[in-house]
Image 1 (spheres, rainbow, N blue to C red):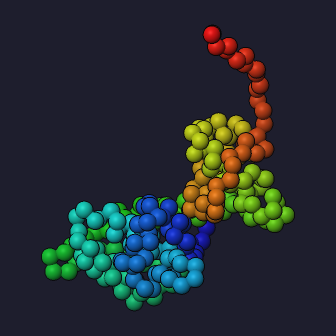
Image 2 (image 1 turned 30 degrees about the horizontal axis):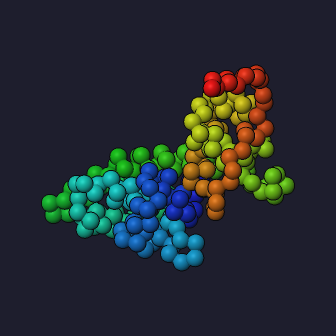
Image 3 (image 1 turned 120 degrees about the vertical axis):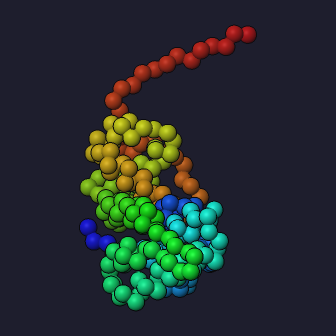
Length: 216
């Protein structure tokens, strides 16, 4: 699996950073270095910006906004100077300590947690297929005709992973978890569609329950 340097949508960055979408937008406007931000058409951030976003948000109770911005800019200048191209994540790890006057920070924990979420998101993208010949281009789990967002809707409705897996025999638990992750990072645009039954699900049992008549 290659760690690409893709431009991420704010919704993707929110999932990888482990924060809400409004936090990502605030960081884009107030905290992130220009190098890792795209503010034109198709607003977004480069993947390594998620490390900065996670740190900026979670350290808010301990550090001032100026201290957090200083730390981010200090690290980013060293990463940019290193010029390690596609190995930005490794470069971030090498430069994730900050020492200036009385300020001493070690951001290794932020790096490890964010990088793990990035790794999982790359895995999630690998299980998704978009093909105009399959359900009109609806994102599906690769090798199946199961829509990603239908799986995520089942999880959101409170169905257990094991129950969803039994309803979709073509999916295993890992695929269900990754499909749900992908759907969170890439929500459907516009008005949410009506929740459908489990597409492609097998009926394992069926029974009829008589309605109880209310007494007068």
